[in-house]
Amino acid sequence: MPTDLPNCARCPFNAPDRLCQKEGGKAPDFCPTRNMMELAEQSLEEYNNTPGLFEFARQASIQESEGYSNKELGYAHLRPVKTRIEEIMEFAGKMHYNRLGIAFCIGLRNEAKIVEKIFSSRAFEVVSAVCKVGRIPKEKIGIGKAHQLSWDKDEEAMCNPVLQAMILNKAQTDFNVLLGLCVGHDTLFLKYAEAPCTVLAVKDRLLGHNPLAAVYNADSYYRSLK
Image (cartoon, rainbow, N blue to C red; front, top):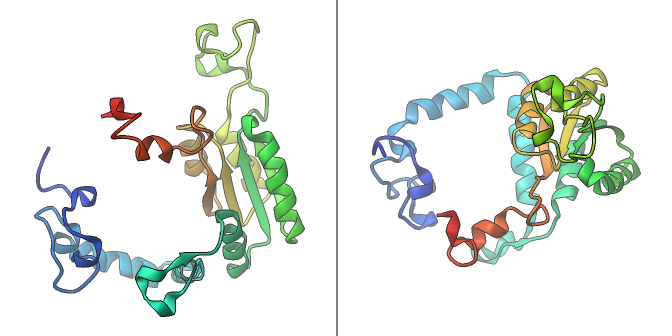
């Protein structure tokens, strides 16, 4: 692997000692904080010159801070105090978003129903679109029966994240929330959605939508991943 490519995941230094955390900190040869400060300056220009971006970033940092208690005791004593769904709603309030979009997988239809009720109970307008919306057969994108989930059916509806995005775009949502879209389908939704987006949960069929379980067990039960 080229040694000049940025690779923060391989940084050998403790987080508090890293250059990205403090002036004069430690940095490996591939450190982008050391090698790419011109890009850092460009990113700051984006925040300052792109309409709405500065406030979005400011409120996101405020939301991060408000997710912890015990800040006055020092970093080692920080304690998380809010769930992600609470933070999504609070951030939407900070940004004065009123209409929330939910793009969800039909496999998480029960979860979507609960999320919709929670959002609505907080006085948000909610627009939602399920992955199978439009009932377009998978054969329209070149999928044969061998790659259908139900082989006993003559036809099976495709997941259609592009249409999900189009529906939420047409409804002029202020903020979209992804709930359980498949790998690749989530990518397409994010590509075509016009409103800012966040993720409440990702799809992991095997691990109950907790993909980090495999990461946490990469040295034991899931060692075959490496």
